[in-house]
Amino acid sequence: VSAELWDPGLGVVEVLSPLIRADRVTLVNKIAPNSIPHMEGDSGRVNQILTNLVSNAIKFTDRGTISLSAKVLKDKEVLVEVSDTGIGIPENKLDQVWAPFKQVDMSTTRKYGGAGVGF
Image (cartoon, rainbow, N blue to C red; front, side):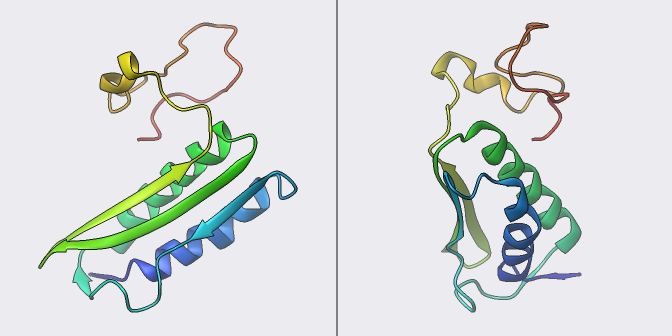
């Protein structure tokens, strides 16, 4: 199955834009058309990953910018980045972000919801 990063990136921005606080947060797709070569892959999975990452950025960014970008590293490698001006993750919690059902704040009184399975 072929995957074009521009299309999922654009789709993610279009679908998730209504969830942002437009007066305080800007969501930008910096993946330019034709900047990433055609690659073979699972476009549904790429879309799911981008959606999860951008959704998390929206949840934790109260003010500023969320950007989706990508660049070619080698022949068949692409680096996709979602960056934001949100609250961030403390350095001592970075090793937990890929663990299922883990969140930075695991207390019952935490401000942000979710099951911790987004990544």
